[in-house]
Amino acid sequence: MSVRRTAIFYALIAVFALCVPWLGIYPVFMMKLLCFAMFACAYNLLLGFGRMLSFGHAAFFGSAAYVTSWLVTAHAWGPATAILGGVAAAAALGFVIGGIAIRRHGIYFAMITLALGQLVYFVCLEAPFTGGENGLQGVPRGTLFALLPLRSDVVMYYLVLGVFIGVFLFIRRVVHSPYGQVLKAIRENEPRAISLGYDINRYKLLAFVLSAVIAGLAGSLNALVLGFATLTDVQQSTSGEVILMTLLGGTGTFFGPVVGAAIVVTLQEYLSDIVGGWVTAIIGVIFVACVLSFRRGIVGELAGRLLRSDPKRPVAGAPG
Amino acid sequence: MSEIFGIPVAVILGQLTLGLVNGSFYALLSLGLAVIFGLMGVVNFAHGAFYTLGAFAALLGLQYFGINYWAALLLAPLAVGIVGIIVERLFLRHLYRLDPLYGLLLTFGLALIVEGSLHQVFGASGESYPVPDSLAGVLNLHFMFLPLYRAWVIVASVVVCFGTWFVIERTSLGATLRAATENAPLLQAFGVNVPILKAATYGGGVALAALAGVLASPVVLVNSHMGTSLVIVVFAVVVIGGMGSILGAIVTGLALGVIEGFTKVIYPEASNIVVFIIMALVLMIRPAGLFGKE
Image 1 (cartoon, helix red, strand yellow):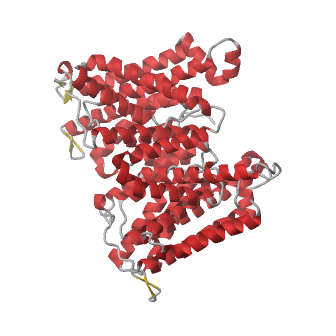
Image 2 (cartoon, chains in turn yellow, red; image 1 turned 60 degrees about the vertical axis):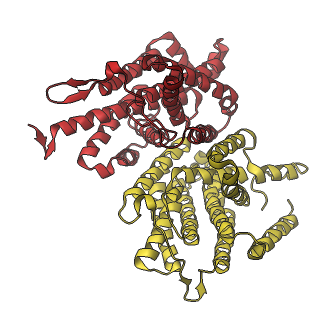
Image 3 (tube, chains in turn orange, brown; image 1 turned 120 degrees about the vertical axis):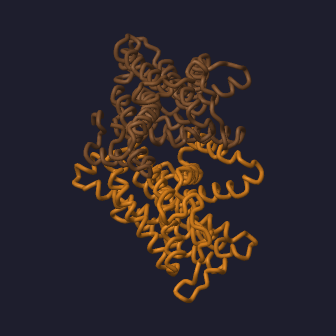
């Protein structure tokens, strides 16, 4: 896609996003969608640009949700500081889990993150401040900077939208920075990056922590939006969902995870009314179809088709 | 000597046998995972789902067709193995040329399909398989009472594990399998039908998981998510043991079951996470796993 068409595309999306509160779309649904889109973008930073398949990313999303909810309910912190607290917890957890997991590659990396994610799940189940099976309920949104009453869905929506846009631009900036170039070089050929003198473990760990931080930010916001943090947030199925969002939308594309998150969240929200408990099985079918027939994801395949007329252009990384 | 550190010896021994029972399931499952990974380069996330399928096959076979336990022990793994071969032919064989991560993702999707469907059809509660009459008793070993069924599970699993080890390491079929693991194209050039070998291996591996499911069905609740958390523990077992060694998978599985059992006695809160903590420690000291080579 040309730069101009990309700009028009993003402008249309932005206009739509700004108008959402007046289009009759349920704002809490849109906020949940944006939080998961943020989560998927964070995941994509790791999988798409670092080729690290984490199967335990719900640990960061969920633990940040718990910490934020706990700070708000038990210690009456304001929303801004509580979110910061949640993000800090996710960062610390990302540093530890990432530090252990990057010692192995590929499928072992996936299995290790899966196991450590399950460890975090059990800690959340049994720790004294997480409310066990019930989770933390009735989390008030509070007032941001003693100015913005987040109780209003419209105000909260614009806050979430603003944070999402900031995160989206930040990820683009990171990927296009010299750091991002090195990360992609490691993705393409790790031994070569080592031989060029890069301390690859530092680069990979930083990618992991960045991804955990953004996932945590999404989790904290999501907890404030919904007013609760539950075990679902840290569960392995949530880790699976974020993988599906990224894969379905397009791994390694900027906008793909957003598309994937929109599809999966919409499916869960509206499909469950029609098909009831079959949602899990249907998500499994989408997974299988994705892996077998469109591994580049929706955005990746579309970009590939659009660019086919110009064979010199690379396929990955579009639009952007 | 009826107490150690204030804990009755009978309790310790009881948890020890429970740990060995769990360890038997870990061993059977990680053995299948290791064999499948060795030959096909696929990490079979659906392993837990096939374990669940085995248990369901036994339970439904009993309820609808009156198939008894001993027949189920043979028929359920056979049926699940055939399902596995179909899965390999339909889906997995398209992924061999690709990054192994795609195999992991595909089998994750398969697990969701199986578990989601079972959940929807049979509900979340689940029930147990009745212990067969011939194994219902309790052995009096004088220092403890050992439920006969637990002893049977441990013995049967160990026999099957070592049987599998023998087939792979000591027979000509096993030699062919190992040759395919080393260099499949060369083996194919010698006239061995490698695609069929791969399909059969996948079938065999998931049949082992189904066998574990049948063995487990009288001691756990048979429901749609019985394999979900188990497969995560088994992945941790495989990371600890390293996937290169079959004997390593068996020994690590049994040992971790026992450690988990002991943790239940000493510090019950940690029994769910002790395997993961050990995994993290092993990774820090020996990243390739205890029996792995890298």
